[in-house]
Image 1 (cartoon, rainbow, N blue to C red):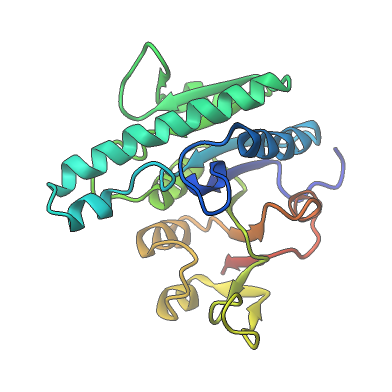
Image 2 (image 1 turned 120 degrees about the horizontal axis):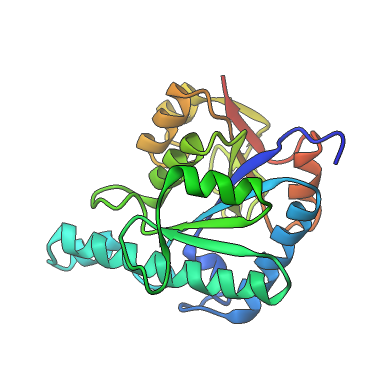
Length: 238
């Protein structure tokens, strides 16, 4: 489609995006809602890759806080991201979007191993690629995995999907006077500790000049208009 600002995106989703409000686990209806938004973007001619978290199923930090070995807890979280990736793949293919799941932790019977050149080839063929298994290493978040994969596939932007319309100086759900940032520099996002993404992910984006766009995926027009160049959400860049 002519007029696109971004032609290849990495969409970072939280695991909670797949669960019903106030719930855990995987809700197929929520997965289908996300799939519909992804299909709309794919039909615009945008290459779409996705990294999804596992907070709806398991958090490594929770296990660590309960006395588990941190590496073991993180590996469990990485496995949970593959479960979420398979769920989203099923929803996408159910509406006609050809999708591939690649995992940083090898499990050939359910997902392809992560191979950068193969992932790029899938994108060039118009397939959606979902990256599961985090980075394949403990002690790294899925935010960092998203930043890493976005750099590896030469994405034009990393889109952090949230349920608010950007980054604020405080929680807009509890502070009616919270101020929204239209644009932020990487260094300001780090120094102000605004919770855009974790510091490792932001630093990786900063060093590779990869912009981060934080927006409300559940606004039916936000993602589409942002890809067309309209100001939506909060842009973190130089």
